[in-house]
Image (tube, one colour):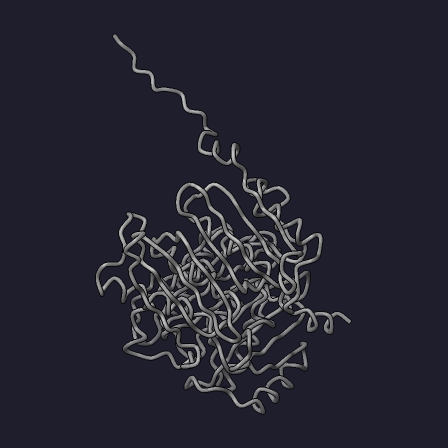
Length: 445
């Protein structure tokens, strides 16, 4: 009887191209007088542009210009970047990290996974359980969620909350009083039941979900995926988002490049941190491949152009397809936009801290439109972008009075988010893990 033998394939065969043509990364501080040029050449692969942009934005870099080309088997791009203060990237440890994260050693987690003040791509400290929540937003909802976790004796040591078009999406990392992940089925089941009851609300909201994970996730990336899957992009033409001012309304057009067979997506809008990341995330979630791109900033505005095809090789030929892409990109941009007032807090970490702060905000008639929580050592760093219950801006006098009340037990910094800044969000929120620098230093002294 004949025996069928399958040919042997080397398990490392898929990495053969990377081994023969390893990624080349250069950090150039000589060619441009006002920014650092980061050049990446590597074998092309699905999702590589998002990987590179994600690393640069996680390092808090501002991308002022970019040139992308990945038509064929090779990926070549140049990024013009500065730090949050508009200066070149000159720190030797930062440059070394860039070369490791984007270069040949990027396939290995050793030497790349950890960054002195944060973990690039993940937000985690020790053992944790990740909780993902999505549902209909309403005033006081974050306070109710944090109260459930506090009552069950779970500590929130990292979280990010986005609201858009009356939807809320949260990613929270929690552990118990012993700083261990929560893996008891009964406790998780009870938590899920109570959180789902809150998310459904009194109007019987059906589209509400709670899920748990013991692994790592990139918060911003995951929030985009959750809201896209929730189809938050569909509602804004029916119910305009009061949290997104007209000054941030992007102008998006889609044309066809007949010569090369691309669809050309052009985005012009007010510039801000992480804008390129948000757009590339959206295109990736919609399964479009970016073959070429140019990104530039002119004063307070940004212009970005992407030459794309769908993964199946098709271009955008119908008006319905174009309209859907425009809606999704606009939603991807607007999810992170906030104008009004921000409240930054620094206090010793403890179970119930988030519940205490959000309860005070709710009792003062404020609703949270975006929030971030991180932990550094024993200190909890929180930022809240707030509006009143009707979605209108909050008076600074009210916020200053609130700051004095909360400031009795923790360090507080109240800021008005600029509406006409050259680069919005370059302080506080643009920092991935909310390491507020001066605020933390003042608390520790």
